[in-house]
Image (cartoon, rainbow, N blue to C red; front, side, top):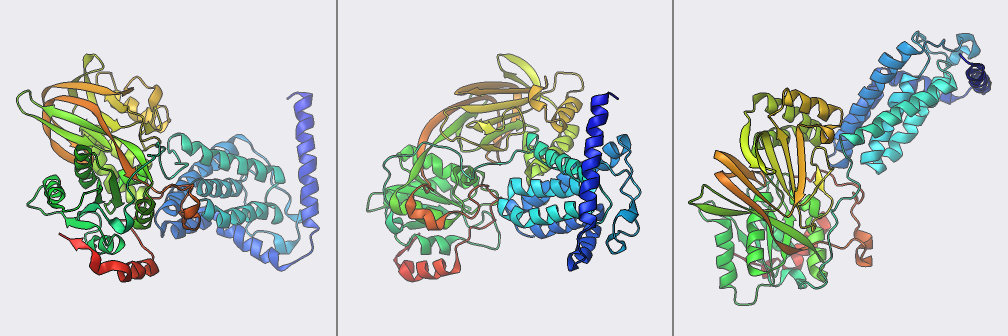
Length: 538
């Protein structure tokens, strides 16, 4: 060890002893017993698991914060307690340096450097702050108190605590690499300068799918109450949704100024196709289970729909389409989110089954491992040549992040398709894909391919199952993807001073949507009294 390094360590040791002596001389207070209980509660991360349980009790960003916190604590505990403490053996402060009423019993015997308690505390607080800043306002002071308690009770030097906290925060921040945090709850899109003002829904025809989302909730009455001047339709199992809407538009005595939809992504896609054909703006009310399109759009509840349609605020959104068939029979399906073939539909099914408990990215990783283990490769003509792949993913617009698991869109009017695939023609391709995913390096792996294109042609030697916007739509041997058109979709402009007192409580982060949209009770009563009987329900 060089003389410069020895001098540095001596200086750190001197500072540690000075801090320890200063803390030891603090007068006795009620805080002593509290800090002893607090530091003991953080043993084996019990405190953070309890906090995670409380956060997970609520949906949305707090549940994601809990999951990221647990993952970060696990990583911090492994790095500090298994790796670093084994490498750096440092003696803990002598017990007699602290008054007897502050000492932990029994005293820990592992290496003092770094502090595992501080690492876990910082990891959990940082992870929570990344997903739910409001929750972090409560968690951060507790984490800071736990870190300080290690010095106050005499079981760590100050430098142990600082390094442990730095390690924990670094591990929490590193999760962004493979588990992206959405910085905004709406994707960027160009404002549409002029769209019809639909006061109380006048001129609007809305299609409601009562079986989307929560099976025990029918949103029809809420839509009727919120938009009393609109024509409200309900989907029927024996009647095509788009055809039903076309008939209603043709039957209207007054001009139809916009069409709307309350349902999941499949229903939204069908209504969006009708809106394109008639060159009408679209109103989206998120009442499905996952509501991917509405989440990317940035519409989270019926209150925002009322605001946007009431003053005429909308953004431009691209709609893609896929023509598919076997050469004799060709059909067209509009895409609002994604298309997939190969093992990807199974992957999505498993991810959606598990993501409510684990979160989207961990569920995706687990689903990928399971799906690839069961999958059979398919042969397609893509990127100018025939190749074997495990799956093909096509997104309506670029998904974020690039070179990683597609999580969400950050722009809705790019005019480009996001094409991704996983190759099956390389040795150990499945194993390489899983390892690259774990190391957050899938974008640099040879097994992964990605392009952003305005159109795409794909050929298959034999029919393969196709899935669009979460629904299996048939099979085909020829596919052609294009950007079909651009819709004006109503979305509240959050920069408008009119909505200053209605800002979203989750304005920085987009939570998983509840299975039903929520309207404050007072608003429901006011809306119902304002014009419940004026609605026309078909």
